[in-house]
Length: 429
Image (tube, rainbow, N blue to C red; front, top):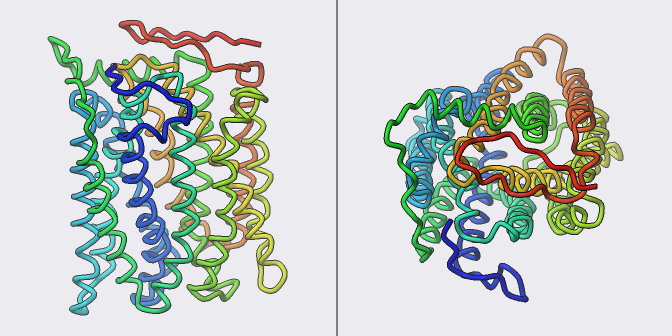
């Protein structure tokens, strides 16, 4: 691993390339957050889509993880990560930029939305894998918790801004204009990535490449390690339930609670303030409470808070939505920061792409299944009962972490940096 700057007293924000990586990520996340609201609103308002059609947008957005998630990790490990990040940003800008162009000529269709989100989803697979694997090549492993916490804090600010901005753009202009802003954000992100100066080392190239064996290396590492295995199974179950919620949330707020685009955006921003708090507190909690303990407890609190979503209704009961979004977004940030730091610490450098691919495959591979199931079930039993099913599933998912070795672990485990993916776990009480 190449280290170009050592940690200084004022933290990683003094690290120039780390700052630029944060900026690129934060800018693109603002755009992504805008599209997450604008895309279903475009389908609902302009194209009069059904609940099932809107859920299909979320299904196709994450379907690529199920199709190519595992081999993509092996492919990323064969390449330098920064060019992958830049190419993914440029490709997503083109795919999503086609929607406002078509809308300007009045020829946008659901099939174009489906194709655009699917192509963007394929590129997001490569972006996410390369992004999670890139940070350990910029900073020291002792700085990973701080680095991930800082990255998540910048993402939290982006998440806080995006819903209100999306609601304003949709209500003041149109949903297609909001999607155009997302496309431009990817171009801006690619520009920031281009300014990173760190010379990334060429990846290790095995003499005999075998895609199947490389994929199996990642699977053996994750399922052979009790910590990574618990994280992977928790991710799969939460993704299934969370994607079910996301697939029908906007439809629920528009058709059941009767909210406007601006109100939905404002409520989302109020709730997502919790993400910023979670990102700020994650490192402190991991140090004082313990990485494993805080991960399992936070997952339980997250599941309990999810039960507030189906209680949402007009009037004072809108508070349930704000409270649920606030608490779940705070918990999500803590979980992600600690979880990603554990993954990066436990994994040998040359297996980072494949390990992240396996974890992401379990998480995002379940997402299209959850979105598709939500669309079908909501058509059968209604939107609110479907939200109850998703909320109960989120609560049960915490059990994977609670019954694992994580509650007994206080510090991050020692680095597993051998030549082969040996499953290693050391709990420091």
